[in-house]
Length: 163
Ligand code: PNS
Image 1 (cartoon, rainbow, N blue to C red):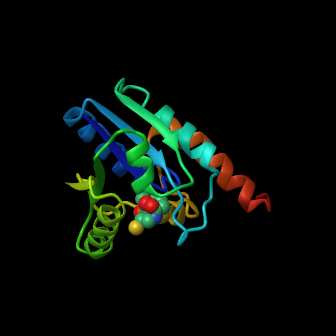
Image 2 (cartoon, rainbow, N blue to C red):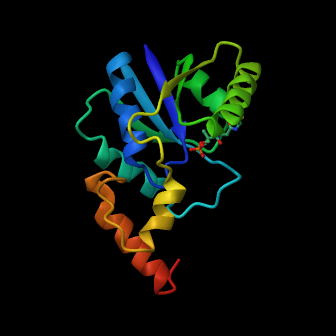
């Protein structure tokens, strides 16, 4: 059974990695797909985000990392999957995720969304990590070790006026 775990992953956090590890134990294959969320302005390119996830999840042999610029409903169909995995944090995620799961099933009636409740990383989000990083907080509790050097380098180049 193949499941799709979609998201912006800008960048992948320990919260995402926890969901990836648990979902990869439930399904034969998990495809982590970096997708566009038009409500968010990305810090990393799609390719950079894919590479960071590949590094962070390199220890999981049944995890593939991909990206798509299209609709999740179409992507799942094209990859032969009928299950979307989402991580669910406290109440605030619920309304939005509930709506997205219904829209995705409207667009692709075969597609169901399964929610894994967040682990101990309940408080984490990519946005909050980007905010914390400006204040010289130790990042190892929040981001996979494998991506911290790249994350810090990007932050430095942004602070020096780069893109
Ligand atoms: O990590 P995010 O930003 O909460 O993930 C949201 C994402 C990327 C999964 C969502 O925006 C999405 O599915 N984008 C792909 C385009 C699409 O299918 N949009 C309709 C979803 S209702």
